[in-house]
Amino acid sequence: MISTPIPGTIPAVSAIIDGETITTAPGAPIAVIDPATEEVIIEIAEADDALVDRAVDAARRAFEGPWRRMDVEARQAALRACADRIDAATDELAILETANTGIPIGQVRDRQIARAAYNFRFFADYIGQSASELYEQDPNYLTFVRREPVGVAALIAPWNAPIALGSMKIAAAIAFGNACIIKPSEQAPLGIDRLVELLQEILPTGLVNLVNGRGATTGDRLVRHDQVDLVSFTGGTATGRAIMAAAGQGLKPATMELGGKSANIVFDSADFDQALDAALLSIFTTNGQQCLAGSRILVQRGIADRFIEAFVARARALRIGHPLAPDTEIGPLASRRHLDHVLSFVPTSDRAGVRVLAGGRRAPGFDHGNYIEPTVVTVADINDRICQDEIFGPFAAITIFDTAEEAYALANGTRFGLVSYVWSQDIATIMEAQDQLSSGIVWCNTPMMRELRAPFGGYGDSGVGAEGGRACEAFYTRQKTVSIPRRPLGLRKLGMQ
Image (tube, rainbow, N blue to C red; front, side, top):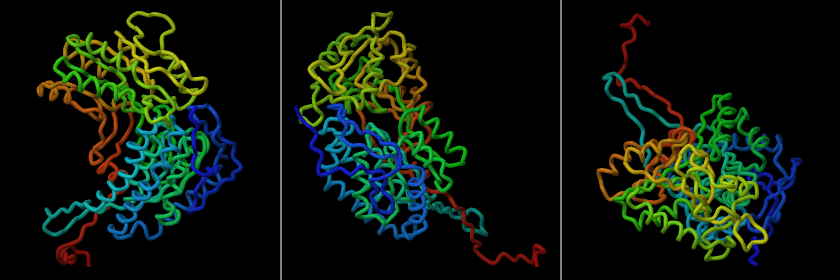
C-alpha cells in the first residue's frame, strides 16, 4: 500500500501574519484528512477573531507601505521571483496538494503547480502592458483615468484545486498593488499554507497573509471585517450567496466563481475521436471535481450508439488508484461526505429515462479511501436532478438529441452557465452554437483551456464577475478621473473673482 510521504514536518498552521507562521490558536481543532486513507494528517487550530483582526491589520499596514507605489518593473521582478520559487518547490507542493485533495499527482504537478507559477508570471507581464485612458475631445482640458489599488482583499480558495486557484487570486491582488489575506478551504489547506510560507521569502512583510478556519466562523469574520475592502471567492453556489450577501452589507466589491453544470455537445459532424477523448478528459480529470467539467454530454442521434459504447468502454478502463501512483487516472474523492453526495445521485432502482451504464458504486479493492468507480448514465429528461444539480465528481450524464435547436435548449436548460463545449467540423454549426449557448465560456473543438487574458466567469448560478487579465484589473483597481486645463481658464470672465 502506498503511503503519503509528507515532506518534513508539517506545521499545524493557524495563520501566517506579518511573515510569522502561527501554530497555536484558541480556536477549535480542524482535522485535515487524507482522502486516500481517511486518516488524519494533521489537526489545525482554527484562527479566531483576534487572529483574523491581526491578519487584516497586517495587510492594511502593508497596503499603506511602499508596494502600491513601487515601480512596475520592481513589482514585476518580485512576481517573477515568486514564480521561480514555486517552480523550485514543485515536488513538495505537489505531494502536499495530492495528500490533501486526492487528485492524481501527475495532474497536480503538471497542471496545477505549473499553473500556479504561470499565474505570477502572467500578471507580471500584464501589469507591464497596462495603459490608461486619455480624453482630449474637450479643447480646454486633458482628462485621463488612473487605476489605483483598492486596498485589502479577502481571498477564499476552494478545496478542489487550492494552489492553482488560490494563487490566481493572490497574484492578481498583489500585482495591482493590493495587500491580501487568503483563507484556504478548511478541507484542503496544506498546499496553500506552504505556498504562502514560500512567498514570505520574497514579498514585503504583511503583503500576503493567511488564516485557517471554517467558513462560517473565520471566513465570515474576514469577509465582514470593516478594514477588508473587497472579496473574491471560488466555491459552491450556496456558500457564494452567503458570502456575497455579507460583503454587500459592507458595500464591498465581490467576485464569485461558483458552480457549473456544463453541457458538452457532440454533433454528428464532430471529429469523433477528438470529441471522445475530450469528453473523457472534461469529466474525469481531477476526479471530476471541477466546476468546468463537461458533466452533461449531449450526443446527436446519428453517432449516439457508437459514441456511448466507446465512452463507456473507456470509462471502465480508467485506472483507479492511490493518487501518488504514477499511473493513477482516478483518485479518491476529497472527503467521505462528498463521496456520499456523489453516490446519492445514483438511482437505487430503475426509473423512467435513467439508465446506469458504468460505475455507480464505491470502487472495489479499497479497504479505505473515498474511491468511486467512474460513473456513466443516460438520462432522457433534463429536469432530472442528475442533470440539474452539481454532482462534482466522476459522473457523466449522457442525453441524445436530434436537432441543433434541441441541443441548445437542452444545454441552456439549467440555472448554471459557466462553460459550454461544442464539437463539430462544420463552421456554420460552430458559429451558430457559440451564439446560442448561454454560458460565460464556450470552448469549440477543444477540451479545457484557459486564456488568462480573457475573462473566466459564468452566468446565473455560476457566479458574478470574472477572473482574467482585464477582469482582474477592473476588480482589483478602482478608477480615478483626473482633468487638467490645457491653458488658464480666465475665471474672472465668469464673475468668479
